[in-house]
Image (cartoon, rainbow, N blue to C red):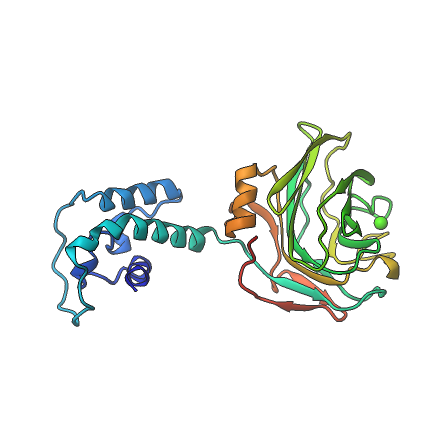
Length: 301
Ligand SMILES: [Ca+2]
């Protein structure tokens, strides 16, 4: 309860009347300027937790009586509560965007999600998503076609419960052997960098290594769809046998290679670097066919 009250007052700034919580709770305005950088904010929080008392503020209006105060010998819990509070605030500020798409049918060319905004040119990228399925028969998770002739500019194919093929620059660049994904939520992140000519993949936050590839930039302006494989732009040339059936949640693309610590944050803590280039919301996608969506709690391993 103490923690919840603290979080509330940090968000609302409404805790001047509750003197029981003054050790770590103060109106959010007292942390001004509100930082763009979490380090400033948390260092200020730390400073307060350590007991550095500032000048008294103006007396507030008399409020209603609060809950019973903490006993003095409970103050040793402050660091633990502070850590929980820091994590909660970090999640509020950096929580991953999440939306889950359900593709209930196999062997059709009507069910898919199309991303509508302009797709940027990529010289490096990290592509992450959660996937759950029990079908592994040459199913497409993601297909990006920059033109009719370059319809495999970026493609991720689920070839088996333990195999994923990664296409870049119109060619298959890597076959990844992975732990079985059979019917369980699995977090996948793919990355590539033209600066280093390397690509790689993470499964549930674990790196499968780095590999050389001869690729070049991914051209912008094409069509990105989820759950079907394009053989032309604008969802052209779909094939029934390449449809994905199952759930895909929180697809996100960054225009850089995330480091392993950032990948773990995404996978295990639902914390995402905010410089993502592509996320999906109901405002920027088209749901085709029998595709359904939900807004579930963020998934973590
Ligand atoms: Ca294709």
